[in-house]
Length: 113
Image (tube, rainbow, N blue to C red; front, side):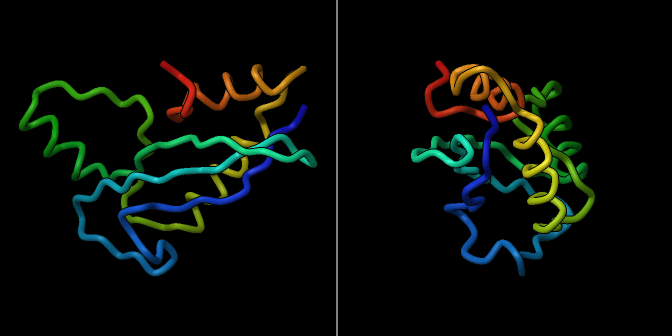
């Protein structure tokens, strides 16, 4: 079974394509992903953050988990979309549960505890 990226958006940013945050940014994104050619989709969330944001977080909290975070020097929606589409295409399995578990390695699956 193959996964398919259906949509990629943020509830915090109306227009991701033109979004131009400052040097220290962290944006929560949601990918709606479903089995290719079949109905249904589930949500997978992750943050796209800058190294400056990470540095500020480490300065404040000393230790920060990187799970479910992607890092880039400046926000580029098209680059994020390409990266996510590639990761989704690589997530294959014998059934949807296996595919979703692979996607949940880098994003918060809505059904993960």
